[in-house]
Image 1 (cartoon, rainbow, N blue to C red):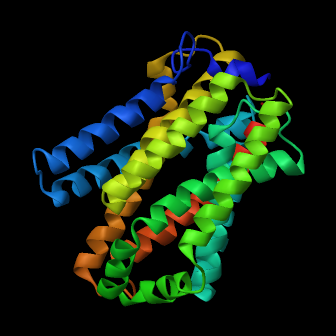
Image 2: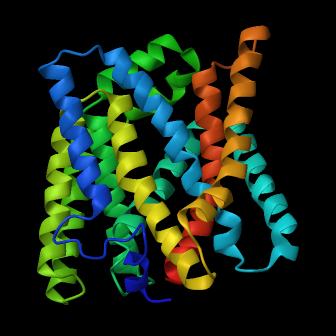
Length: 317
């Protein structure tokens, strides 16, 4: 499958003049959130509650058809895939319990690579050191924006939930400004190099710079949970679902939006019910950790196998 095929189909960007439709949505909703906060003066709690809703309803579904992406048309192996998926998720939880700081920062690094790989999917030479470093640097820039401009919110969470203190204390070991500057320089250098090699068109080069600059502004202006929702759900998850849908269109017959939703819904519902069960359980009995911390571990656990699947997906794209 060629990379250009990822832009075709109902969720594709065919006909886009500059920004893809999910980038337009990201910029529009981000601008609307800024307007609501500073001109309508809507309560921050309302925006955060809406953000949490979208994180669950859009973030989880984008990893709900990993079984179809990993083994195309091999239903007899689906049970094996699910067993391996659960095993990796369980192992991730165990590592979190033993080494939370290591788990958190490893999760951030792998996620950063995944974000960049999805955003810059059109880079044709994917499987070399420079391209992988480019993907990683793009993701680190975005995560650095989230951390650097929201340190007060992060420390506030730490003061509210003591189990986060180990992680937040680790933030003191590095300078977020330094990380942001270095990752930005690495990204710009490698991206410029790809432009020089003609792996990146001029319009793509300009578009990515605009997205990064505006993302920095929105992350500086808006609360952390809203920032994360806008980036993870709108810019990343919808883009990933667009690529998945295009893949299914190419490899299966008569894939419609309703059929795609049927693929997505089962594992999405199971995941949401699982989180709801943990939330209710926390209200009934005294759990060793807060729901927020358990939520982070669970999301990390189901994300790690997803990252392996999507890495294989984009390498073969």
